[in-house]
Length: 497
Ligand SMILES: *Cc1c(COP(=O)(O)O)cnc(C)c1O
Image (tube, rainbow, N blue to C red; front, side, top):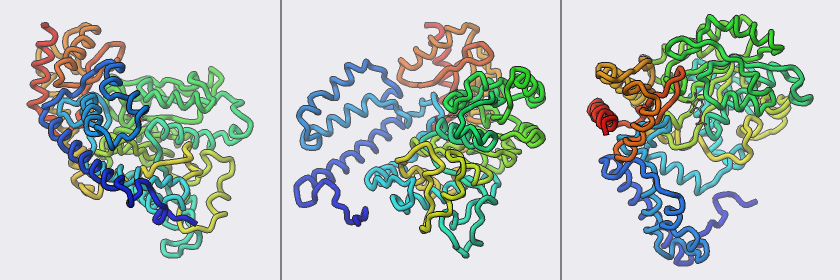
């Protein structure tokens, strides 16, 4: 059998290719470090939107494919041309999305993962990657307050950690992003609440109660799972956009009257448009009382679990049946690394099977196959990138990072609320903030376009309560009050111009 260790990988070290590869690797790293430095110093525009045709021409996409030999030719030019048309997440004016400004150490992990290419959904295809994923999942479970899985899960008879505890502990899997994570968790919910559907298809009309501010992947998952987007029954929201738990009984009745059987409640922790946290304790209590599956979409906001100060925002999360948590948002991890976490590991084992118990036990092997828990078959070693960040910063500094971004956002809220002409309707609980200048919806979009054209800022916009808002997400380690003041000055100038 060929092991990854002795499998010959191109480039062949006996040819000049080896040296060329190493030289190109060093120059790539140099170029990336310089790229990051220039971005941090705002020496390049945060975003430059050129036409695809021009970018393709500058990269000489067609010619290179015809000629081959990328590393023999003007590879450096190709690379610098590519970097010139990237959106610079390292630029302090990057305020647009919930996607992390990646820690450089994770770049090395990404390279190791790509180089080894251990497609690790099956243990023997990547023992180290699988072990790190198992560790990362357990670390996340521990932060929620759930019982981590013993190392023996998947293998039998490991007396060291108390033998086989399947079913009495949490479990999880890492997926390629929060959207897929929501699909995975809601599949587990459907399987638990309506197990016949797996074979028979959807017969009853099955509903999930969710806020209208739930991430679109919740409704999309409900449709993919065959239950239809009309099965996503909206729950009333409070002024801050959070789910109004007192409306749950009425929403439940509305669903039943329309012929639905409610099987699940989906909570936002926090919501995408305003970054506010649902009252998980109240939503969770309702689910316990009605015996419903409680899903917490913590893709963005679960990272607050790291901070003793912010953790109360997630009080009640332990009542959940499933939680989604993205490391590629608040945890400085490059895309992608999303955790699907369940209180009872068997619920995830059966997410894609009617009877999964045999899967866990039939194989005698020293490690765990995550294959039965995912939509994916081939899967990258997603845990490694996050693990390197965690092991570089340590838990405490990572927690301080999350706290710092939240504090800067609160400061921004104070600054913006004080300025005449600005409206900042929702006090932030996380690092997401909505505001508008003046009272005209279209004007917000014009302001955004003008700011982007300056190359100094990249921010997004959202519709909230029927109005158009500018929206910032303070992801960058260097975004501070001074930058926000400059941004507000420039918004006023953009509105005048
Ligand atoms: C970002 C986000 C998602 C989607 O996650 P991706 O990793 O972008 O697929 C889902 N839910 C919430 C609340 C989010 O913030």
